[in-house]
Length: 599
Image (cartoon, rainbow, N blue to C red; front, side, top):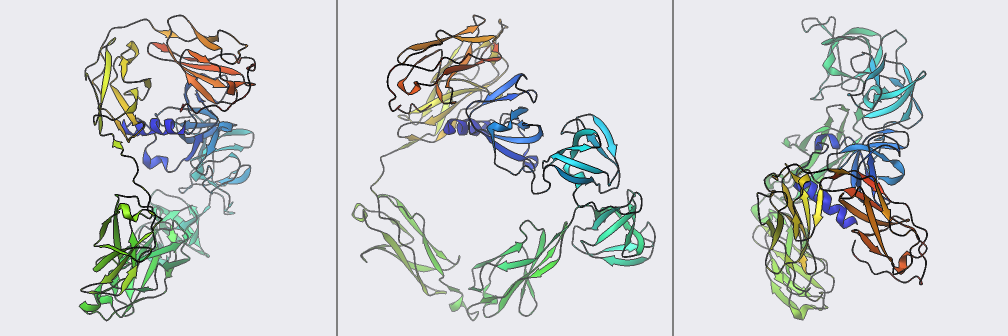
């Protein structure tokens, strides 16, 4: 099931279906479907209409919540409600900001009132607006929206306009803010609302101020008893992050090696200055590649907070080895092998450190027998069962030597495999009633084939597909996954939109089993209402194990003691879905091991 869910997700990406944009998705919580085939509903209720359903392992994005239900976006671009009991959260709902049933206060960067809405989106209607400092109770928290109660009213408010600090000034209409600037430099307080007024003081990023009067361009503020004006763009209600330290990846390096800086706390926004022991600036950025001219000197980095981060930190020194001459330009510090679990016939590659160094490389078995030289080595049958390692000795401007770690014992060559390269549909201009077929390449490859429409619907399986009326207006494509000794997955080009006339449509009313007291070996069948309706039929046990697909299912010994039911979803010119009644527990036969059928 996980493999099938992954296949559908991959296909959705390939077809570039509508989904939450990447720039937005990072700010939402994520979850994974569990427990079988989970329905996406139009409202937060078990009685609400089913929009679609998704297998265990499907990843969804949480946009909001309503009681025990989450409002989610699915990989195929649909939005609706899923019950929280059948979702495993894979990303923090609160984002480390607010907890449920927490007392908080309304806040805003411009001091204006904030709207309480009927749902977690700007498209929902406004219930009321509340001034900065109004107490609220958070019922359900989220990265973008929180469900809150204010007085006797319950609704949704954007998370960025809520704070748990309760920092409101005793003076009516005032609120707490902090100095900010994109370049990390201090900001001036002036005697009036304009750049021509004199400077009263300059405040560093992160300085706490009280906003007395807000304006679109200038705010009247007070800092430690001094009152003046500061440009609105340099004030924020978000508490700034403070840089606490910066650490270098190495304390002793050679020319050609790269030093990396790690800043705490993680996520802090900073600028980097790499300095030598003479105070000269030698580089910027989060890493620095040591130069020949640095030999014999010491290097460190200074970081300064920016864009909401405050403070400055300086690392310890990294000593650069060598005397700066060409002959001491590099010194070998490491040697690695590309794969530590080699097989016969595989090509191994040895990589020396630092980059730019040169060396002669020799290959050995663990018994000390020399087996080859050069940066690559093809594993031989005689190496089977032995562990391999490489040894390097510097040449030219590189000094020193290095030895790699041992590999695992060499294994026998795996059986020959075929990699899928492409799949093609026999007709790029399909019409209703036409039977399409596919050809996979290279010749001799085997694969399972899934047919899909341009809007992401799965239409059928197998090497052929008969075009239906419901496909009119959509392009079609086929997705193949290697089977047996064939590996990889490929997707065909999308055909032109299907052509064809109108046909009768159906909506599924019910699904009925031919026998509700099944026994081992009996074949169960399902009947759809109305007659003529077509559907994708999935057979389930009462423990949500998927038993199979299609209009019939033969009861297996592994089903003894379990009830069986089917879930159907309309296909082609049929819409809607339905679930049959559960059968009585299966009887007859003894429980035996059930062979994995690969559903």
